[in-house]
Amino acid sequence: MARGIKDKVAILGMGCSQFGERWDKEADDLMVEAFLEALADAGIETKQIDAAWLATAIEDPFIPVTRVENFCASGTEAFRGAVYAVASGAADIALALGVEKLKDTGYGGLPQRGRGVLNNMTWPNLSAPGSFAQLAAAYRAKHGVDAGDLKRAMAHISVKSHDNGARNPKAHLRNRITVETVLGAPMVAEPLGLYDCCGVSDGAACAIVTTPEIARGLGKRDLIAVKALQLSVSNGLEAQHNSWDGSHFATTRVASKRAYQEADIRNPREELSLIEVHDCFSVTELVTMEDLHISPEGRAIHDVMDGFYDSGGTVPCQIDGGLKCFGHPIGASGLRMIYEMYLQMLGRAGERQRQQEPRLGLTHNLGGFPHQNVCAISIVGRYEG
Image 1 (cartoon, rainbow, N blue to C red):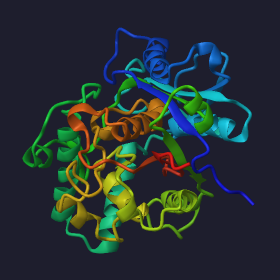
Image 2: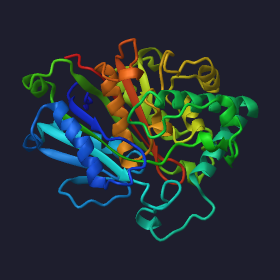
Image 3: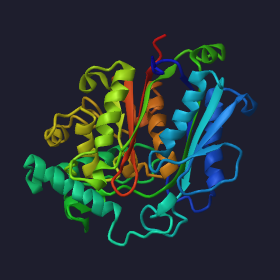
Image 4: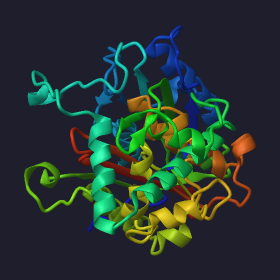
């Protein structure tokens, strides 16, 4: 019987590039920037790395590693490959690296690039903001939420993420905003305004993983270990029949339950210290709180407005600014989230450091087109071996 990977793998070192409009850098420059930080943090030489996984959704670098792509969950997918290699004994030390150079595509949002049989198809009537606007409408209808209340909760989420990003020197967007600014911004797709949408950025993030025993042998004492890694891929219910009401993400509900079981978490609302979720739009963050079984169904708005997910709240969400302000280089985002958890648990997060010592941190990615039918979740925490 499968026993999971709890405490079988430790993070030896991590690195992250500056996110933003990196016009003067190529993808390989960003990879090197993140890799060198991770290598120095790990305290090893390149030759000690046995295997590597690279996540990138758009770039095609010709380098000798296993390249993985799982839409916006690509970074966590690379981490999963490296972690499983170490947990299985196939590698002593493994590397996961994610990168994207989106600002050079000439496209205002994420490039609408098809995969597989979709390569030669176009989607003239479909967009990311439009799809997530439908999520907002479905959520509002299902739970009887007042349109104004939903917009104010979404605005609170955006203001919170900008406040957090302003304290992060590597974040793309570091400007603080007000609720009035969010509510008065140009509309992109009702009810999503300009400040409800995440940034499009260049960037890279990196993790080096090994066994706790090897990490101890290399002199590491304060170990951050992987508690769970779960992936859920939809069977197509979101697009092919009406069993899905459009108000939530089925893959998140499945993956999170599996991750909690693997990590031996019985009450995520009380046991999780920090979370980073796929806040491509403010409404996505709100809905995800319920899909992760932290807020009760239909009650995430109240938790948001009560400050439960603020940086000083019970379970801070996007304490580094999230996709909204740190940025969203597709292949790097999942690893960037884990990087923040790692920094927070080691007390290295600087101005944004959580005062109460974090114990368990969860990261969440959505991906897929057109209905976000992939979910990847990681849980990391202090080693308990």
